[in-house]
Length: 243
Length: 312
Image (tube, rainbow over all chains, first blue to last red):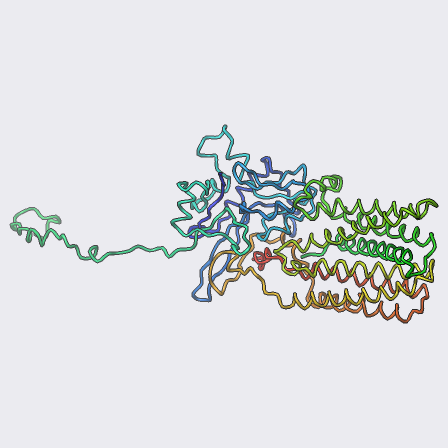
């Protein structure tokens, strides 16, 4: 069983919103579009987005950390939004685990949004149907694209490589290794939704200096003795001193 | 949550319609058993017609909740998993049954079958109460709703308002049955009031299961939101926040606490069977139920709100 998912590294996300705009750009014109906007150039602009980047401050001044937190559909393995849909418009694909909405069946009752604790479904004001992240399903299987471009638009756009994409059920995939080795976690585990998307925690970045790096144990001077002193008439490096 | 008028009207109108039908059928069963005096045929026909009007008005209001009302028929598809789908099946079925029930009383030959039709309609009526309430009670994320008190209160509040309406109808068309209905309305109203108070008490003590720490997965007691990613609002800020000041919410709670039972009970008890007073009792109670349902939605706090605490 395949379960495609994103793994988002909070340690390197810089909150640039490139994934937000790239997602909007791709999906506005893709099969999940249009993602309409209202008052786009007026007061209180609003619109439909599949992906948002939020910012949180953790700690108390002066010991604070700024955490940029991208949020999109987590493609839960046990999605609570799917069984509540009265029409079957909301569904989870068996072949790759992507949770999708069939716009032609959606009646716009918003019940699935109530049943999602993460608030990642947005009702499009103009289309009057529920919209959500598709993991760029119209892109990742597009054989017309070069192999390396068959990734969600947000992953392609991320300048710091904070977004990884792959199959979390394949233990050897990039995302599984990242989750396993860097402490990947799921959001709101208390609800038992088993989100497929994982987040990698903030980590203290630094480097370790071992004592033998400061004082070399294999110092060649100690092993072979001091180098012989050159004669005074030997050419010097700067024509002044003789070493 | 942001209360939607379409849903408030749907749940209160069909609740009253269901309660009215149950009152009619209870009277009929009582009359058949010889406990109560039999009201005339026109009482049942008028009552069933009134019930149909309320149910149809509720159904009509529900369409305004949908983005695509023309596709509403599709909602019957997933009855195996969705309470909303079950409601979408049971509500029209119940409306049909009430229509046949009224028809059975209207036709001179239908009197015999009306007891059986009424029994079927009563089963559908109870199923509809369960379906409507379970739409809310089954969403575990809304802790204020996720309790057995939700179906109980939907049933009790609906039947109480329906019996009050039946009492005023009986005062008009079947004075002999009026006293029994007034007493039943008082009893159901008192039970509904107790149930609602119990729900208020329970919800006042709720502790949210999700916190900002689990929402973003950072185990720290002090997390504040700096930006939610946009400034002009989104579906998330419109659908899940009512945006009313706390004083308004509190005023609505107090108003429904007065209007749902104490005031109508006073009118029912002291009305002396006069039609205008009993009608006023129903109208007051229905206004209270509108406030009660508004508060029911406004009170619910969705965990997604954790992600939308600060604009920027």
